[in-house]
Image (cartoon, rainbow, N blue to C red; front, side, top):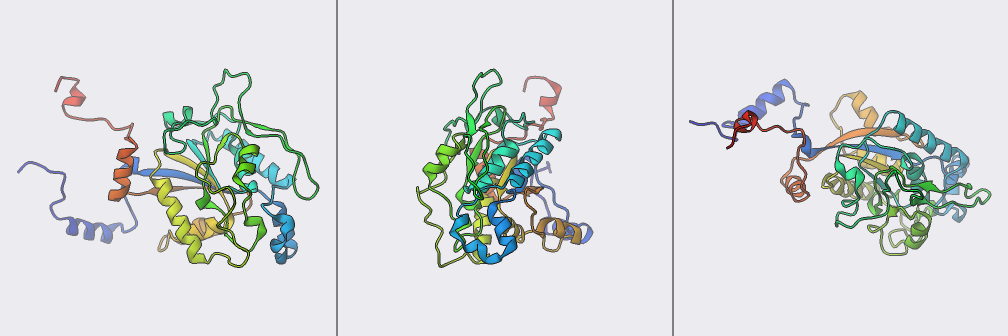
Length: 320
């Protein structure tokens, strides 16, 4: 009988694997991604909240900006990213000031090592084939800006020069990776038009409508609601064509989303996944999805394993 792609006794094979190495998993590389999860740098609301937790409810800290320390944290992350030549094909960022400022400070204006040609083109930045202005060529004399220069405002905003798009991957904001929504004004986003003006190199096509309709003053998301939103976001990430993605987001979102994974893993692994993120901390995790839905999405996006080498007649170089 000729060989087939089907396992003759799948239940026996699965039972044996579980008895020998229950935690091992093998998935074709095209169905895996490396996600660099980043929490934003220190914001003015963090400083106030550490003094008195009730300060998180003050409108003084609505859509809080980074402090001077927060900016320095983000820039130091950027130096680390550049030093290790971190592969980043796409930066996904939560649409709140502190996350946007962290993202552009850490991933803007650097030359990146990319795993695919998507890094030199933004045709996949929205998933619609539309190009954005996030990427410029090295030869441009005046590259577009990720962030416009901003004036300082005592206790609320740090003065900062504009940040260039030169050499960076595409940036896209996504509503689903926002911080814990409701009650705290620091977690209420500004109007989309405000962000577009401040961050012209970021794609805001997935953030709508103009005003924040998700945030309410009398309801704060439950843990289960955050987890469901986080899992929906990860399904969107898994369907993207990019292989190396940075996600700049928030502590509660990260904690409750990642708490859905790693149960039963070694204690050290659970510790890395489930502990709360420090300001501007980055951890890299492997995301896999070998479901029928994921396979169909990757096929539709034209994703293939660039390392694959066909054997047989292909390997011989002979016509076939």
